Length: 477
Image (cartoon, rainbow, N blue to C red; front, side, top):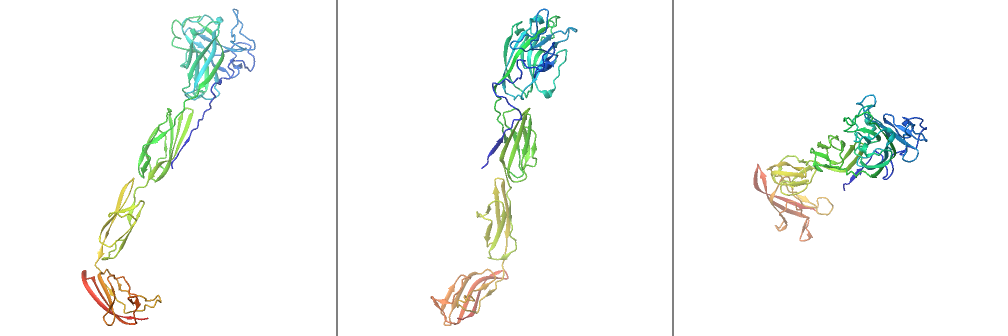
């Protein structure tokens, strides 16, 4: 019985549903207390992605003539971010700060998350623009991409989650909640101020439109695991013949972009395309097929055992020699084949015994086709040599106990009679191979002289003729 063995491996970590994936979400942990602004490097598990964000904790808040910056929503820690179009020295520059953290495990495409953040516009930073000149954004990236941001000016970064600047209130924290479904294998999160379509507009590029954003209590909670990926592949034909070529195709539900095939027993054992054509088999047997699919950080392996059944092409050969025999003799025809042999007359078997001239055909067939071989059997009309012995001794000594006729040709219509000296027939047979045991009517015949007379048809110089011969036989006890 064939079976399918399925192996699935994920080369990425996973996190439980309901757990906050972000370390130090309230910015309470630190390596040392900040003593002035732009010291994000002291905030545990967070660093700067754009500019130098301000870190507040240990009771330190930036001094101001109109009040402190960096008021936490709760606890002692928070982050301050500047959003400033234009930069003071050049009215065409944009300047926005952002912080980043490594995710504890790589996200699995399809996982769903709930993002929360407490945010407000600090009233010390200036008035809030009346339009969304920029956004507070969550940007998920892969560290391997090595994304860089200009110190001044807009980048090409487009956060997956955006909170418009005019959604924030001045001096009043609000909790913003957004849903996010991972569409790639992200392992780093950037939170900060990003350009949008209005950033370079005339209305936004006004001196004095700088804003200062305080953020606190950031969380990223997984609400749903990635959907199950149904891995699969199919061959265009599972029962084939030696020399056939077939194709294989990935039928899984994931959008894989890298494939690694292994075709056991095939001429070309490897493949790297979603659909592999012209996979040819020159050897019979049952073979495994394995497919490893990779979609970014996800790797799945599917192996099917004894998936492809490759049958031999039928083979047959009649191995008997073609030497002519004498007419009527038996000839045994032998075959070699990898399937049951069927003869032209319907007989089944690897051996056939014949006694007539003619063309004999043997056939081999299976699901891969039919093949046949033939032999021409010929007979010669051989001259007959018949010998009638002149004595025998039916005394049960296991030597010469029966009277038999010897011949080296095919005899037709034989008739043998044995008579005693008075002409009484005591034995008669039409079977040339029968033997007389020296008895008559169940009793042993006396020692003495008997006469054996044989009539038969046999060949002589290629002609079938009638022959007769006699021989006196001495019966000895």
